[in-house]
Length: 155
Image 1 (spheres, rainbow, N blue to C red):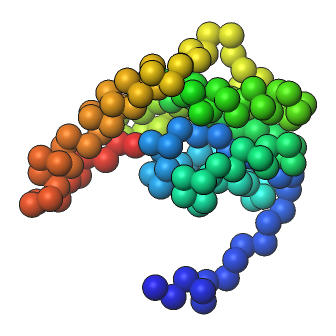
Image 2: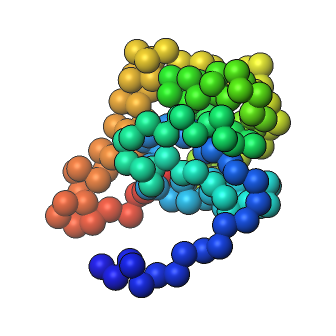
């Protein structure tokens, strides 16, 4: 409500572009990803696309020093794959953050470049992946949370 009274953190470090699937927007996982980037690249100067809603921010990739591509379960969604290709065209250094959940804990692997075994999804495959991903995550919410609240929020 009084967001305008909040102090803005001073940004420092190189400009980092975060490329993540839209289904991770505004989740605990996204917050953890930003913390990992701050630690690994010593930067708080991070463009987090979820802060811009669904507007396209890929025009800012050419300004970035680094692009961090998030690959949940070893897969690049079509959006992330497109942004990685743009970064490679502009010579932006790419890091891949492979993430998964093990119980209530986020497990990740930080890799410089793009691993060879990454699965690049087409738009159709991305849609299927999102359906499976979101169904497993939000079915509990739809069944119970509206009445009783839900404790199961993995991502």
